[in-house]
Amino acid sequence: MQGLLRRAVLLLLVGALAGCGGRPGGSVGSSKPFDAYVVMGGHIKSCWFNADAPLLPTYVYRADVSPDGANVKITIHAREALGRAGMSTYAIDFKQEGPSTVITTENRTMPPDLAAKMQYDIDRWKRGESDCNKTRPPG
Image: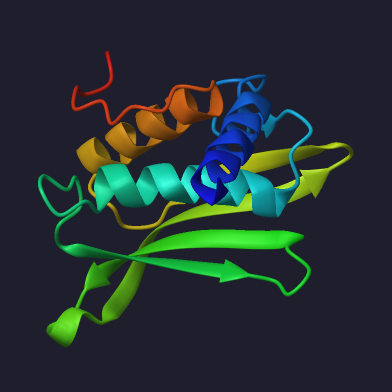
């Protein structure tokens, strides 16, 4: 029963993500920052940091969520000794703007080909896609 409830909540959140645009600052329907983060963070962890074929095997995922869930930022860091997070290389910010959450990205020092793939995935997920597409972005 609890698993069914989780799936229903995830489907509702994915549906809320489907109405946004595909640009780096696209808004996410009427989702709150924390709700958008739950869905987007799940995609990021399962696609970019999975155990079988991670996109980012030499990087570390970190999330900073305010106590009220209104401010959320995911940062990707270079992996240091013992798996610790080193320099921040990429940031994904979730901010409330009116009734919507706007997701913006910042490539700090990520190699351009990886940053392009990451942005491509984020744009797809904001449109409601949920798969771990292994293809590189067109163009």
